Image 1: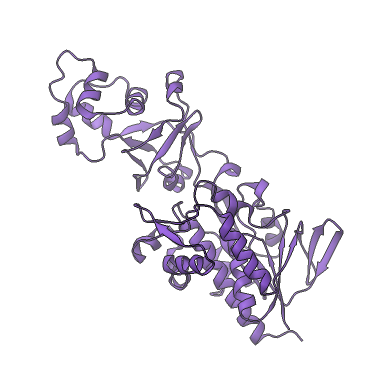
Image 2: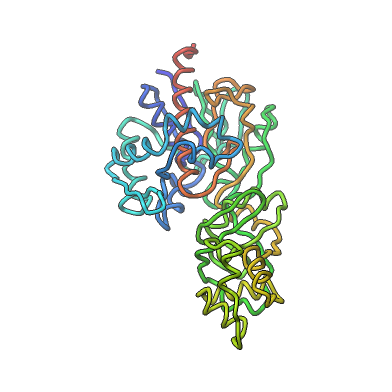
Length: 395
């Protein structure tokens, strides 16, 4: 029987293992950390957003420049397939008002337990605390509690994650190993990260306040999601889609009244009378305290003319200092260049070695897109590796 090793015990690696064992191959999953799926479990702490139920073209657009390359994989294992897969593991899902799909249990742990039980029942072997250190000739080299181990499988799937959350296993250390073997790897950058903003002292009472009913803009991207004002800047799903533009140095603005155009807003702001400007804004626009604080922080001195004030509130300039450090980002941009892989995600420079998940050079916002593409690329790599084993059987 042909043997395959999957290096990395996250969702992409586990999906590759699933595809390989379904095809009848002996599979071992090697994970550097003491347990499987640590980042997957972390993602589920606030509710495991598995995918998003929306039109295929809108879903694909979330992947930006990688959309064309991922299209066939997402067509094979997109939102409907993710929902069916979770249900098949005894973890029914529901779709929220925004289209985001969650397990009814709202946790990652029941789903992961069911998945690992299924894989173990099919004969998949798990090796934890086995940290991959590269190759010695054709052999994979691992640092293990028992010392250095070498194995020579018939196919290898690398699913090592990006370069964020190193304590959970995604530290990007594999990049230099692959570069040394002639594999092009795009430099890493933070993605789905907080935005650093040097607030003045008077914003401190607002730290932790949710930012709702406003639009965030940078470059060509506009986001209407919710965010949180923090001591270091802005966090949350509402600002994460701006990461690519912020990473490139784009300016950022906040629209406090996205449901009104400037003309309608100016009309509502007319006739201030004797009220202070803050009282006027609160009365006419019903802005919450955090929005009023943002207006004063980012628009001072606020103009009294209604038209000028409306224009200011529609485009408050945020003096950001870029993205928060990469290790605290939800995901990373960069990784194995897509051009280094064939259609089955096999490395052109290393036949028989496949890559999947966040270690590939694609990025997407939160909202179910990240996990869905990890599943889809893992499935693609696993199935392609199974085909490789059939057409190039071990001698």
